[in-house]
Image (cartoon, rainbow, N blue to C red; front, side, top):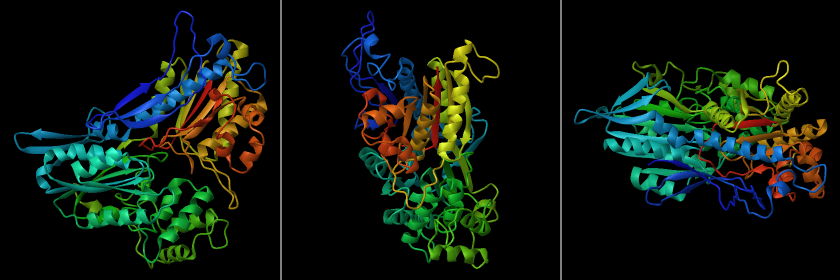
Length: 566
């Protein structure tokens, strides 16, 4: 199986001699579609619908005849360019392709087969090799938003050795196609279990217990291939006694509302469940465990991605979990109080009355050669670098700001606007000027994951990327900065509990929306954390639509943020 990435520019009328085309409707969408039901090839499409109506000179410079909120020709072009960069970033971290690049089944002689896994990208200088004659059975246990695609790639590679193959993949709802689900079951004996995210449900528990049971029935002649991706913490959820699913659901909701970063959330989650923090690997002992990780966390801490189910938890303990409870107001009288049963369990753990997560001293981790090994197959850096490469191809001077961007979304937005304002001063000086980080046109590209701290009584709808974009739009308006476009997008295709991946704005976005949609106010939307409803069903011109709606992309490596300046 091979994934193809197709760019479809549909219904475009181009007359080269007169440069005549215009658009009535613009829609950006990345969709996963099967090109052939027989071959099950997956494709990504960037779709720009354009219908000719009048000349370029009439429509491209402005969207409205004369008003303060019209888009400039530069802004129109930069919006298209930013979406192309986002598309490139998502394609670069396709989980199916990532595993195919890292893992291959090789034959040595007539009968001996070896599974070879590259540890890094240095032309295979470092490799892990598994002699398949040592195993009678191979199990694929996959959790996370990218679990279907990862399981599909692993199954395709491993099945060629002819060993008994089975497994379970827990996916977020709508994050696998019908064809993927059928292929995994019929060809590779891997069942797919959809579940809820970001708050787990009964299906999460059932699927997780199924995975844990498969792990417990593995033996020394079993090779477990664990595919881990972002979202796994909620999807792989088996409550530790005496906790219930309702306890964990309330806990996840409180953690999300508190604004706690995902890596800190996972310190608490590890102690409340049966599979996190190395417990899956411990359950599989004495089986051999190969873990393939698609990272969604800043800095790629392997022990925190999906709460590290197959790696030793040397970096945290009961004391750390209790400290976070105090720090984020999760105590009984705090703003985001955890259930009493959870607080009591954490207290018992701190008092050394409960066993903690497995450490490096556990036999699953301390054998030589090690029974458990972990390989990073993709991360946010790959997405950011792909966006930067696309920016260069489009004629921008790209600058990568880093892949560890975090903090409140509204604060981060202010930083991007300030940097754009500084770079824009080159327009007056006709050159780079002193101390500028790039000449114009410039593309500032960053990766990471911001947070939004939501008051307990808040009923707004949105996500960190939409809030970042809305805050940026307000700040751009306040300083009167034009010919700047800012986009923020989740690589998984979902931003908060919405159908949008993020949003894209310019210096006139606030005025356009407020003046063409009665009753909408940007400042009220920010106050109520209601960016989605501010941007959604915008009645202004189609080319100024602000939500980025990709649908589920099948991957998840945190967010990509793009600032373009001309």
